[in-house]
Structures are given as C-alpha cells and as structure tokens.
Length: 332
Image 1 (cartoon, rainbow, N blue to C red):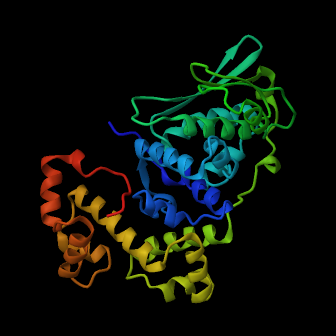
Image 2 (spheres, rainbow, N blue to C red):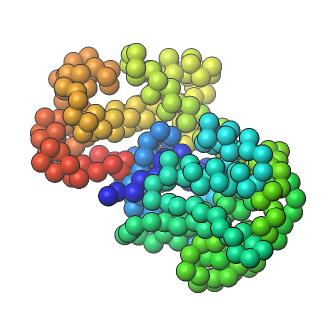
C-alpha cells in the first residue's frame, strides 16, 4: 500500500527555495517533478517520492538541516479549516489530541501519539510501513513543527527531544528546537511537563505564514485554474482578473517562481487526466470536456504528448496493472 502526503504538507519547500533565491519551478523540473507537486494543495504525493525530493534538495542546496529549515517556513495556519479547529482548542492537550486525529488526513502512514511518562508527557511521531528513501529530513521537519505546537501554550516549559538521527551539527539543532536533544534515538519524541497539557492555547503565538508574494500568487493561480475548469477553459487574462491583479503583474510573480500560466495549466490537465482515467468512470469524451478541450481529438493529442500513448491504451494498461500508473506528480 502506498503511503501518501498531501501537497499542502510540503508546500513550504517552495518558500524555502525562494528564500534562498532559487526558483522552485526550475528546481522541480530539474529533478523530474511537476510544479503541481508543490502548488496543487489538494493533490497527494507518494511518500517515497516526497522523501526522495527532500533528499535531492538537500544535496542540491548542500543543506544537511534541510528538514528543519523547511519547517521554519511552515505555518500552523496553512491547513485552512483543520488549522482553524486546531487553533480554537482550549488547551495544549486538546490541540495535541486533535493534531493526532487529523494527521492521517495530511500524511497517511504517520502516527502522532501522546502518553504519560511519570511527570512528563511524551509526544511521539512515527512513520509507519516501509520506505525506500532516507526519512531523516521529514522527521527533522516533524520535530520542529511539533515544537511549534508546544510553543502555543500560554506558559514557558522545558522541552527535551529525542531524535532518530546522528549528532552532526548538534548545537544548531538544539538552537532550532530550543530544547536539549538526545541523538541516535529509536524514535522521534518530545518530552515536556505533563501539567503543561492544561495550559491555555494562545492563538497569538501561532506563527504567521512567511510565503513570498510570488508563492502566494502561484498558489492562487493554481486554485483558480482548478475552480475555473469546472465551468470553462481557464485563460491567463481571466485568471488575473479573478485574482484582482493585472496580467503583467501575475506573469511576473509566476516567472519569479519559475513557471508560466501555460505550464501550470498544462501540468494541471496532465495530472488530472491520469486521475480521471484511473477512476474508470468517464469516457474519453467526458474527460476531454472536464479538462476544457474542444473535442476528444485535441485531448488525445495532448495525452500522447504527455505520456507517449493514447488515453485508451493508457486506460487498458491501468486495468491490467493498477499500480503501474502511480500517484506521484512526475514531469511527463
């Protein structure tokens, strides 16, 4: 069974790259991923694909602490409705228990648990199942995000962390987590006083989003493409109008992220077409209509360009071997 991660869970990768003067679209395409891997917040990415992405980026950026640095850009408010419910909890304990409930809807195969150890509370994050790639950066990110959750409490507390990683750059890690750290542990754990679970939750302590204007515009363009596709074909001009900006300003922000409107539209259609074919509920003509093509012939030509085969042949392959099509957002 494939474990999956919601794109919104890793979108801070884009913010991280922009903060280092890199264009996320260019970096993603250089390692074979679609820009939609970070911009379509409703999409899912295969967990192994996400781990490979993090490892590739760590090498490209020469950043052994990439997971921590990405989590620094992470905002606890970026999950929209779920974030609102989380931050409206009365106490830290309520917030942590709610986080444990919703984590499977964000990262399947991740389990968050809270238990008592004497006078201490132990918050544990586990990645279940097998994975092909080193999960170090993902777990590093988990530890810092959980530390941000603890910082929502209305009172200071001493925190002790256990990390399943080596002690390379230990001083930097302790500084990032604002905690004493034990390295080479069997699992990721944060320990803090049990009584702190009754501390009131202070929404004012929730870190605000740090995304650049270009990242925010790209996310809004991607969402507008998805919404407009329900009623007609999205265009750059109509999208800019919907966003309340002029076309040149929108194009400038997209270029700053390393994409164009046409590329995002093409990637959205490509990724959506594969999912619609795999669903098995729609004819080729219906899929062409849902993706705002004038007829099935135009869709078939585009699909052959993306995948090298016509959609009927692709569907036949899926029916024989459902696992062959995958869920990762790869560049075609």
